[in-house]
Length: 152
Image (cartoon, rainbow, N blue to C red):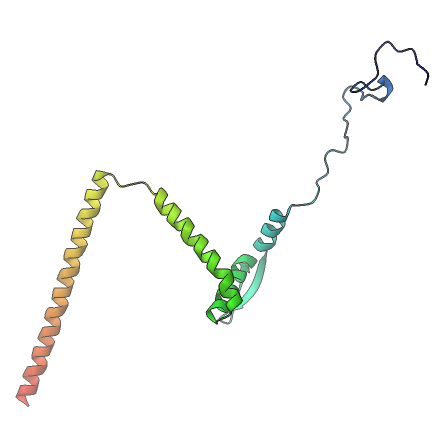
């Protein structure tokens, strides 16, 4: 191998001047290729596609996710064991997320608690008044029927 006259060292990380990128020139002029979508994106896009369905004799559009969930629930309700085994973990996950959301709900302050207690008492009084009124009306109807029977 012959040594050329160079006024700089060629080696790792120091390519020959001729092969170096010129100032302003990119090492990848076409840019990064877009590539393919990952599995999550493909599934999300497919589930968001809309389809036309006929439900109770009416045509309407819905996304594929909604249609698939309804079909699984209908199959499970009809007694399909596989559909039930698919739905049970989904229902458990939903319940767990609802419980987590409820646990994150802010606690009521003292003023809020007083307002809630006041409303609860008012609703309870109104319900009792409505029950008493309904019982009084039912009693008066029974008395009318008894009076009517006695008159015969």
